Length: 320
Image 1 (cartoon, rainbow, N blue to C red):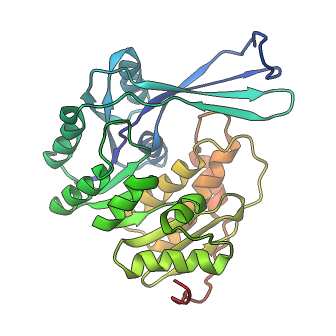
Image 2 (cartoon, rainbow, N blue to C red):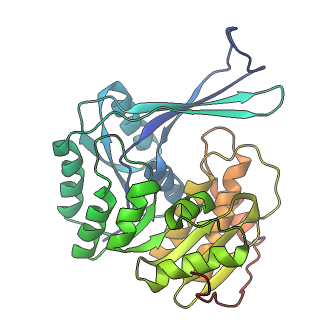
């Protein structure tokens, strides 16, 4: 079996550049643009490949930008499973203001997929001759794709003996958790939206994550907390990692890099503690790179030894 299959329903070409100062009305002369393949699962696949993992990427692709996406992934040595669709693959833009270091991110919507197109993505996963051990479904759903798409994917994963890892938000996240997933990676805002709770204190974060595990919605919850680090909760583990102090160049792709480190180590048979440590190192390493470049292996390997793991008492169910 292939170790990891990523599924990215709303992929993009990520364009990054910089200009002297971002101001309205005036033409802004930019530096040469960098173009990278993007979208949640695509970014995960790119980092897994850099770490030496076995990974394939499945995604809908259309038009000239879809062909460019396939070509860019080929250049990185990532095995693609493109699903032909009618609409052009979207683009997104990241602009760095060189004067103050501020970063502006413009995320364009994906074009709607027809029922035949999104169903073709599910059918392709179900029909794989060489199924994956882990299916990483990451990113938003484009218009016209039903909210229960990832729930349907979770059922397919179960039928072919794969473990599904999910990183999405809103109704798509809620629907998939009702079906049940192996691992879910929300950030704090997504967990608040999911639970409808303010979750102002750290103990409440852990309780909310533990409740997802207790009710069978996820075997593992990996909660990313930005500059406060991350938290991992399973039935047998409660791990807390403070953020590693670093100078931030760009936060683009930090969550995707975190998920890639976690999935890569789990697919290699590592324990949760080791996988979580790699995840935090990978998410931190992404902060060193400009634009949409993502984490580099050398930075991840170095930071792995700087990650501190704490083991707080297991959360109870009080107030949940």
